[in-house]
Image 1 (tube, rainbow, N blue to C red):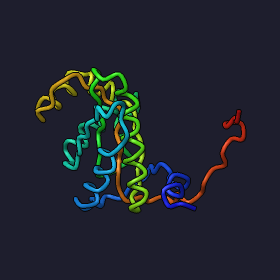
Image 2: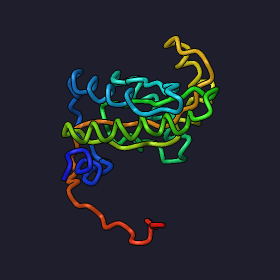
Image 3: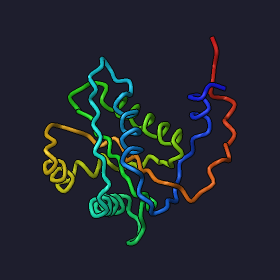
Amino acid sequence: MNEVIKAMVERRSARNYKDDMLPKEVIDDIIKAGVYAASGRNYQSAIIVAVTDRAMRDRLSEMNRKIGGWAEGFDPFYNAPVVLVVLADKSKPTYIYDGSLVMGNLMLAAHSMGVGSCWIHRAKEEFESDEGKEILKSLGIEGDYEGIGHCVLGYTESDLTKIPERKSDRVYYI
């Protein structure tokens, strides 16, 4: 089987991470795959905010927890040490699709490098909030961006080798 297709078939979402920080070179390679995702009319509307600072990572996790309605102490990022926040420029007509393709590339690249990943939602709500807008402003990010998702990354504690069966009624030929 082709290596790219094999990675697509085998990749699973990880929800249990070790504390170990990923090497910067690994993070950079994963990000490179994200910025090379296809985009509508090559607008490249999506941006990535790489969060490796523990305090900022914990701040985003807490914002996400509150939005999700979970009990205090729950970590919706599952202890992952790296969070790649994907946002996209709302002025582009394909921004949601562009950002989603970036997320897919990030997760596939991570898997191909032996790194666990998971798409965590609620980035939209986080970065629509005053606190989220303040974070973007502090980074010099201007414009009307929507949070597409958080791609959490890290070395996983889980065995992700079990591949669930696919539903049989999802493909139709004409």
